Length: 78
Image (cartoon, rainbow, N blue to C red; front, side, top):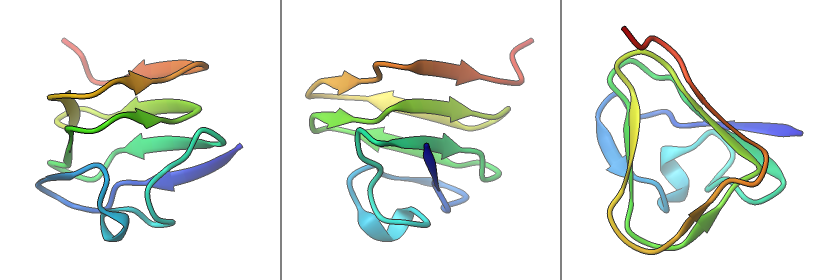
């Protein structure tokens, strides 16, 4: 599975292609939010294969439906 990385070190729109290394991730890609301080905000319906975050990063789903059929990984808890 191809990986697509969120490149902002601040909050940004999940659906903005320039916020990602390969454009907005799709159902055939793994989304990785691991830039220092990166925080993707989704207000639309999105589908990715899997999603992972690192310590200090995150995903806020503020509307729509966020579908992740394979795996959700959250690192750096605690």
